[in-house]
Length: 319
Image (cartoon, rainbow, N blue to C red; front, side, top):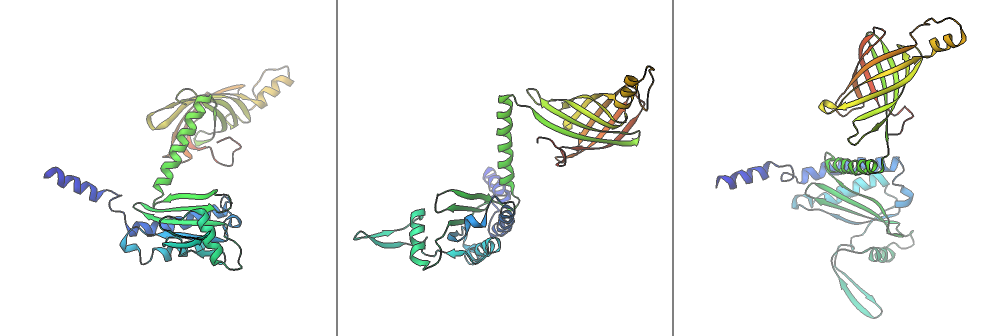
């Protein structure tokens, strides 16, 4: 009895068990935002979609039946406009038609060929529909499919929940599969860092590194220094530590002004900085962001703490 009560309590408290019409309404808000983003970035073109025929806007819950279809049409109208949007009320109803002298009666899901036939019967002199749209309510949110009626190509398909959790999980699994394949091929992964340690000592530099090794724990590459030393170039190597994904390593930097001065002069002296500067570095990322805290200590006596920008989009690197 106690075990059954605990099981029922767990089901009642779980996110999926509490899903319902409120979840659906929030999911439709996310769907509208996602579709607008796909239209804006060009991955979902209105020219490929319109005219579009809404085949199904199917609710799951009794509480949703009064408003679900209207809300779906409002979302699609906001994204695609209302000039090329059609509703096929006959698509999900029992259908009777005569073909080659035979009377056919059909129920259940409608196929693409029948969507085209129903559109031909009802559109009059308007342009044939280019795509068909299905939107269905499910326990975790809504599911949408947009299919090209001419080629059966899937233009867009997505399960949408209020927090886009399923979308995020799908992206993470895709990234994991992509990463495993990259490791199998032996391809390196380029990472970029901009270190700006400014207090109390100063060290500013840009690193381009290849991440390698069986567990991707090593990063080796080149560094360009803008301060400590001033205008320097050299090599860097880091090792990732599992705790907080901290990167610990060092740079060996050649001072360009000092090197040029020694090459053009018979005298051996330092200009601005020593010929070689060693810098110990530790980076601690901030959560899952592209920012981190950096600690540096150089052989020039400069010790500093500051900000590290990791793989920012302005850098010309392969992400």
